[in-house]
Length: 119
Image 1 (tube, rainbow, N blue to C red):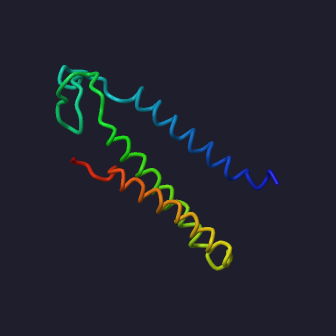
Image 2: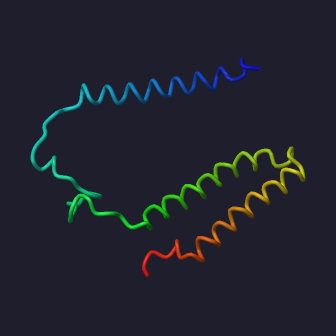
Image 3: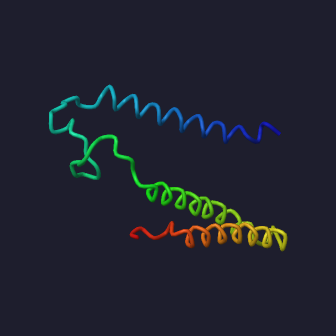
């Protein structure tokens, strides 16, 4: 049974080696020319304003969490759609229950105002 996981482990190892190799290569091979302009902190291409320790609004975190929840939903929908006929009615109703829970979460977030940016 463990032999069926060998390709997965090989892929994960190759991805880790590739990522670490790229980080290492850029730190050793990249140009190092720090200038005062390059050392200024910026946000989205523009200079940041205000103090460094300003607390961000909770709306940023709520948006990120909601995005993650519905992104995970999409990840589960693709394999389910591929195996839809093989799963039969049990798979169909299981996915309906999954989508119902996510819909309840969306309605809850909507009612709490998490989807409204300006108040």
